[in-house]
Image 1: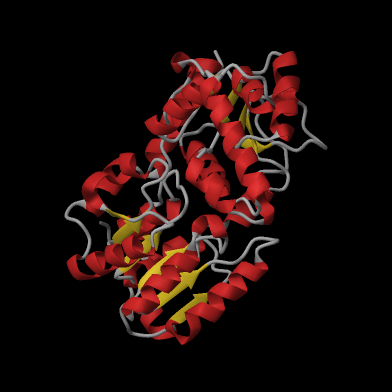
Image 2: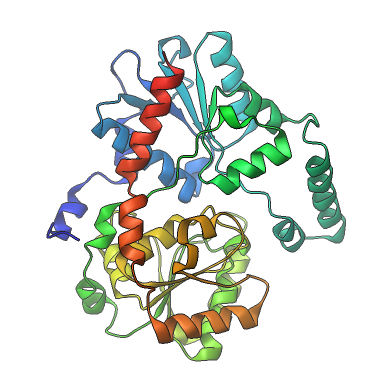
Amino acid sequence: MDDRPLEAFDTEPTAAQWLASRSQGPFPAGSAYLHAPSFAFQAPGGGENQLVQTGRHLEALDVPVRLFSPWTDRLDHARLLHLFGMSREGLELARAAKARGVPVVLSPICWYEPSALWALEPTLARKLGALGAWTLRRGVPSLPGWRRDLLRLADRVLPNSGEEADQLARLFGVARARMSVVPNGVLPDFGWGSPQLFREQIGDFEFVLFVGRIEPRKNPLGVIRAARRLGFPLVVVGEAPPQHENYEQQCRREGGDRVVWLEGLDHHDPLLVSTYAAARVFALCSWFETPGLAALEAALAGAAVVITPHGSTRSYFGDRATYARPGRADEIGAALARAWREGPRPGLAAYVASNYLWERVAKLTAEVYEQVAV
């Protein structure tokens, strides 16, 4: 895609460095205040990356942004408040902003999947309770609740896909006129990577790659089991968030010597870029994805993609990926075998580069800002 040296990627500020610099003043008057729940970056994932990359690329468009600090910032000074993710904390902040006449933009970053509710709740009582609550809201979208309150307070809601917009309308009664679809994005750097660094530091072999949190929703264990049965080497990049350490231990036991574990790779680590470039197949057979930022990165890097059909994945990948349901071990195995045999679908990387770079995401976001903050 480009002859930009990979070292340029390594010199850009890390997410932590950018976050630290954007939470300290002074900042231009009328900045957009970005907010995520206070616990978000304790176990960062796709939602946190969405906030960081949106902020960075808005700045590249000369849109001033800063991270909202409840200790030092006054909402009166904000051009608007942009909430990433839905939380009760965000609800209270939205109420305070609206009381001061400050527009609120909300990126919900959510998906409500009945099969996931049933599979991931630990007890039968909680499974039945979660599924019952979903069914009730499906039938009565006007049912009161804090999520509905937050969605109603927002001047504009930014779902990541048409499917997410459909779900928000169906479950919470969000009016279509108040929603603007803004997709998730990917850095072009993942299309410029070389497998050389991976091969020098880790090894020269072909493998299936998983990148993400080591937790039941992401279902790395299903990928590990399928790859072992097929005899495919597997590389796992990720760590367990708090309270999922036992699950990670199970993954490590069952993976054995067929799995290479790479922990703590920053999103701007050249080794991560090189790992994507070296992968033959990328697998993300989660209980749902919207659509899985790691899958976009792998697609841009040139890997064949195996992904869950649950969530908004089909609107992003269409027929350019192979789909496998998380609860079907046979499907995961068959999908891995097919992707390994056939390689990436024609045009996948070019399609991602044309539609899902963060630059385009920022432009769409800036257009919304112009509309709500008049």
